[in-house]
Length: 296
Image 1 (spheres, one colour):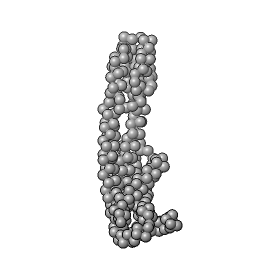
Image 2: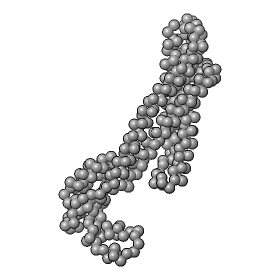
Image 3: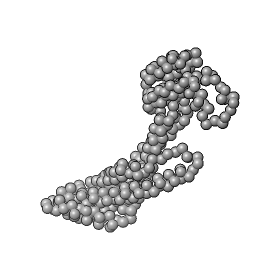
Image 4: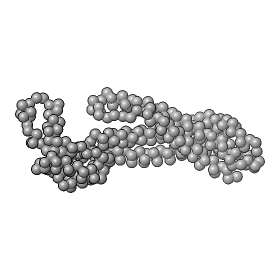
């Protein structure tokens, strides 16, 4: 009974089994690494797309042009109605004079443009929203507000980001499910090989009164070792790949607007997720493999 709680024994037996079946252990670790790398890569892509969508939500705006027959006082009165539109986060009034200044800002001096009367432009509102996925619905609701003549928004850009993000998330979930299953299968077969070589020893231990837990623990520890090893290798490989992609993005003029989140800022979340997934794969594979040999 005393050895039942001898965790040192379980750890020694787990490590011994890992090195005894080196090739299968290596294959199990490689599959875990592959699973976590693909899972992590698609997850990081989805996180960065969400981050870019957040930036787009903060920077993107709907311009609502007010009826040209409205006075400035009437135009300002529209603000309360715009603030009541669902999904609107902020509303900023822009006078005709301010609109002219914004139009001329950054342009070369041009007498024709400089002499353009402010009355040629319209009062307008810069409107920011909470959820960019609802941009089209929000724009339609703003169009329906009394006093708004028309609106302008970069709907195609927003919907493009949303579509890419949703596709990436869906593909990531499918691949994660498939790779988790494959990894469980590989590790289960690794543990099954170890139990096959030790089936007589297991049978003798069972006949001597050893509990299922005492027999299972060395194999569970073996699965934990394989899973955690794969998780740590995948974590650092993911870091290197992410930094490499980041450098390529920085050097690429076509991707100059892409702002990736620093890996270090996400490491505290990524490492526990990788380790937890590695443990799930390792322990799950071990338990699947050992159950059939305990029926003595």
